[in-house]
Amino acid sequence: MIVVKAGGSKGLDMGAVCSDVAALVQRGERIILTHGGSHDTNVISEQLGHPPQFVTSVSGHVSRYTDRETLEIFVMVTGGRINKLLVEQLQQLGVNAVGLTGADGRLLEGKRKDTLRVMDNGKRKILRGDFSGVIERVNAPLLQGLLDDGYTPVIAPVAISYEGEMVNVDGDRVAAAIAAALGAETLIILSNVPGLLRAYPDESTLIRRIPAAEADRYMDQFADGRMKKKILGAVEALRDGVGQVILADGRIEHPLQTALGGAGTLIK
Image (cartoon, rainbow, N blue to C red; front, side, top):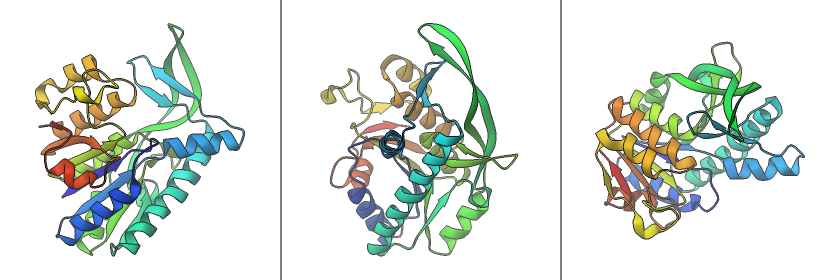
């Protein structure tokens, strides 16, 4: 089984991702496609007069501050428009895709973090009213049942809290949690760079292989911005039994097949 995370940043070729998913499914691979939607959410949030706000945690990770209005925009864009357009593309390619958010059937469940501890100009602050969360449970039987019946799940990064509130969750960690829960052999995380770079944005400095035991050191030394979350997701997936994680380029013609052929950054 292969779990794919197609990031929500500008520049990914989602048509090529869907074509590769279809090719792999036709070869008999079981695929779960998870996706983001950050770029489109930013654009529509601006158009709706509620611009996005990003914060940096005390540990140095960048995330979206998600008040209730932002959450509803995020669900509309990511769980609605993006998710269903991907399902449509896959159906046109002969893949019987099913689109879900993590709130459906309590597919992704966890705690809501209603307060965030962030850094602002070197000072620690607490932000309240946040609707983000951390996944603690994956409804693996739901996904396994869909796969057994010949469906390809397409999952948006929205979870449900124990109290029944929708929460925004990190897409890379969604993919890692799903890959671990289903015992996937491979997790592929696609973004708009070819992998982890020693000197971002110089793509000639691609790091091709990272021993799993050294992933934290590589994250601290080389990862910037969103790439930190991708490495963190990779570490969590490997810790919980996933065979390998590939950080790969989602802008190219055959992103999944190229990644499986040895491109990108392999963490194993």
